[in-house]
Image (cartoon, rainbow over all chains, first blue to last red; front, side, top):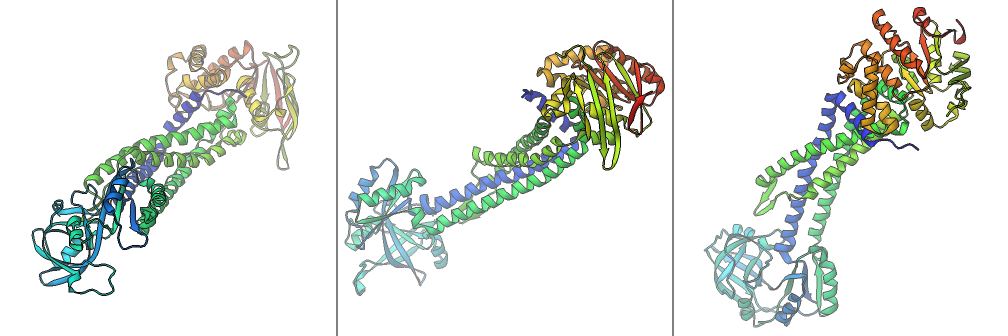
Length: 396
Length: 224
């Protein structure tokens, strides 16, 4: 087995490519187009998934949701929250009280869940769109979901009437069980997973009105790492058997399926890029081999073996892949910069902005290089198997 | 090392058939070291096919090719390629240089492949280009060279690895008489030192400059 200079094989591959600059431009353009398309595509997909996670988890109902297993509420909510907060993986613990209720404004009454949480909470199950969050312990301020606000025509600063059914679980509800509160809209909030149709008030205020100062309907747990939610939920279930802890993946099937759908669309997109790069590249490289039959015959006559000829032509494909990837990354980066200032989707604060990181480039480049090698294999095999004598009979 | 008494190449009853038709029929030939032999014959008589079989480019239907007593066609493909690299040098009718590379690079490629060193190959290429009178044109791309220059570069390329056998297929076929003289002079001078030369031609005058002549008629080899 002889050792062949890789530099020589690269030299020959490079020289062969330069011999037909138009074909090279087409080959590089084919790869570059695929990478240019796929880089912002991956970045936007990541951005979409990040936006979904933000809506559903970070600015939603948290990574883990704790509910009572049997009773209507979680007693000793403060103590449980403090115990959970001590865990190093937990970023925030937010007890919330959810009551059925309604919002009345300008004569119209619309039913809506009334969600009470601490005004000082660092994580909240909504995004502020307008106005300010509630101050801790605020009695006369309310945040209104954007869809509800639109329906009732209310804006920040408007006075509204909040109706809350304070007694939950009673066989019948009488007038004393319904709280009526005149409040001022402090802010309009958004959030894809329910916040748009909800009304938010301060938890201390509502708990006092309900006569249950330390009871929460749910405890929302926010983590530093979303991927740890399922494992931590299992631990909480073991440690707090009266509560049911569910990770966001199990508790938000719509969110989980949206992410899976996004991955599926991404996989389809990648497959299309592989086809879009591989097929024209294969055709052009194959034609190049046919045009270079004489040169291949010369290489064989000079003493190059089939394996070396195979690697020369495969190296050509790899060079095309690398050059196309470099050009494609530059184009992709420019498109990402454009999409950062011109998002592909924006609706009521839900914005899909591309996530710019190394993986946005790495994945498309790896795909393009694999596609280039894949496209190069068959033409390289044809070159390696070429019988030189018939070529010379036809030429000389 | 080969035993001194053995010929550089021996063709034993080589036959090549394409379908029913035998292009070369039972051709036997032996070349001693530094011997130059011309194969004469009209176009289509099988000269080039014989050359390709001797150069391990075309497998014979029957018969064998011995390089210093070693049956070359019995070797695996990689070993045959190695023999083409170090034992045989080809000169084709049209030079068949790699168009994008310079004259120097074209000459250097076989040495680079054999020795693995680019610098050494380039040094050897410079020396051979000087011998064929083209050192001043070494950095010209092959496509920029005249036909005569390209053929002299092809000779340098064929000889850079100091092969024992040089196979030349109508090396002056596309040249005018002045250029043909120059090319033949370069080829004979280069081969006279160590290599046996088998040259295919239909030009009797060119053939007369070689030490021995054989004729090919209808695929059969005989004395001219």
